[in-house]
Image 1 (cartoon, rainbow, N blue to C red):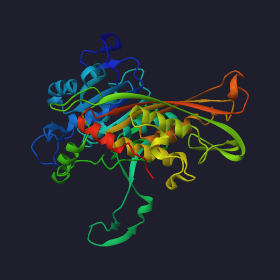
Image 2 (cartoon, one colour):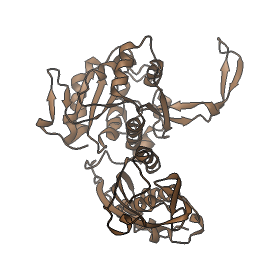
Image 3 (cartoon, rainbow, N blue to C red):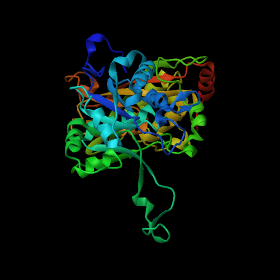
Length: 436
């Protein structure tokens, strides 16, 4: 998230920042009493490995590179204390952060957060503070999908336990539920701001999450892949794995450092790929199939977007290119599609202590026309890369091989964050080998 300046924002008498230019907002719900946790204070302020659950939850929010208004909803008695804590975590992005008092119920607390949003906000993500290890990529995936579809969007995981339906006294099993029809919901849950405001204005009764309230107002809710790290801390048992997850987690956001550990570095990389048309092949581009279009010549499925993105990511992390990392004839990749290479690249980055922050792709050519499927391509690439991917298209006004309709060129630029420690460098060097 870019640093703010006094000119970026306005501040009302209650200390609520309403920054201009932020089209995305995250409402972090941290107003619960922590009764089920039974540790004598609100859950958000319970410490895990030396830092509060609230601080850890905010790390991922403020690590986003997209300008985002952040509204933290806390118990009324802890508003002042929370402002200092939130400002410390936000760092240079503190001008985008506000703290407001919550209500008696979760629904009332979210409503209080919505009233603090700035006028430019179009997409709202609602996040439970009790999920402190949710990755930044999950926030970006939800927001990007809301932008692309206009639906409500919630991350979820398949249910692995066998689920039984019981009678009213919970004494006898009535039925076994088909778990293939079940998904365990997580947060953040994302919505178009105007539709969510209307849903809250007309809501009747209490709902267990914002997706249920949104659906009750007649809107569609779409599921995207969740992340096992986004587990919810509700009971003392939920705290048991927390120190392990905290120790394994990344440093708290780009540019910030923890004592004794260098902050992560931001690195950029560029990748290109060029393919000639081949009328005997199907057209695959940006992980999409374009029926009726002549395909692209080249190894595997001919998709020129995926190799360009792979090279951009590898170059940013200092790990060579697609040829040096995967070879040209490895059996594992015979006939492989672009998502296979992208997934393998992410494994290399993870071994090097690196992770994608965002990717920009430009497709150069007369066809296929991307206008009607550009957003679909962005969503698919974002889902695989685990970070926002933007796509644009252009032509060369008849100049060169693309202008003559002989093929397609792709340029990709990637921003990667990498652990600044020497251990990260050693891991990266060890991972820079041919994968077969």
